[in-house]
Image 1 (cartoon, rainbow, N blue to C red):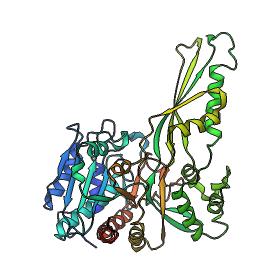
Image 2: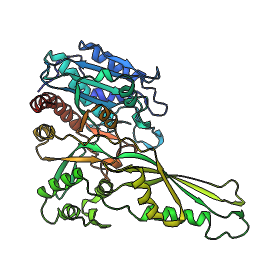
Image 3: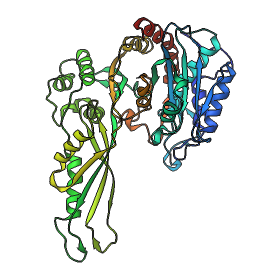
Length: 450
């Protein structure tokens, strides 16, 4: 394992504190100062990075350590933009990077400046060591992920793909957050993710003067539509990756605790099947279903006019192998005749996930987290991995990120929320795990032929 020893390489916690102190809230982003800070560190270990971007204030950084040519290249990718934060809702300032009781507080501690700090520490250590890995190692610090990545990963893949020449595998976000069920701690490794799809529900009917009771028209049907979307679920689809995950979990759990996995594998997913998983139930339901979540409602022109139309915007997420047409049919069945559903602009279907290096990832995970059981994972949201997949680059999302013990809802209730924070112990262990992964994945990729 490569261990950074050079005095110009900060501790992972200090790196994260520095990254948090750059307010890269997106919008507007303004990642330049943060990217330039990373550039200076990379130059300090003798590597000359490249900065590219469609917006001068929002560049992306790409740096490469040359390998021995014995394996395909490995990419470490992470975004430095974050969602916004209201200081009034935080115990400590969201961009203060405070170190309190062994935890670094601040927006991006979990999503995902903490992961960037881990990968940057490992990359700097590799460069400073002078050792040549089996294949090239590329580090990319990216902009704009929180708003769709058009200025970040998408721009890099579409306009500057040569910067990623020779890369076949990657490490990124989307896993490592730990799922504790029945005393067994599972370590999800993100190898695929759901794709986005725009959906709109439109309701039209008779309007009129609001002084008269207008029954069973637009507003009533809008209410029924929203209730249907809130109370009903789309059909279950057991994709090959979900099946592999549930099989791995069932093998590790006692019969009672593993009943949810057995039920899923048998195709008996009811409303309460995943209740045994506690706070993780919404995530598991999203892994076996296409989903459509209402996010915006538009209707009405004046307070005294009953509207003739209403529109509901939904955030659609597609399982692998499904398209907009299938999701449109499923959601139409849920809402019935009260609304007309239209789905479009689904993100491209990536290649089937290549999990050939999962054993090497699992070895590194268990070496640094002996009590954890790695399992392949379908991430229910989107990451920059979907863009790199278009170049044939398979991402393993395995950056350790654990929600604070005081957050009962788990990892997904900790990101994008007030008081985001990560423990220093997790940061350091994760940074060492990434450093360990670099040679392991290189050797494994070389043996597999890439």
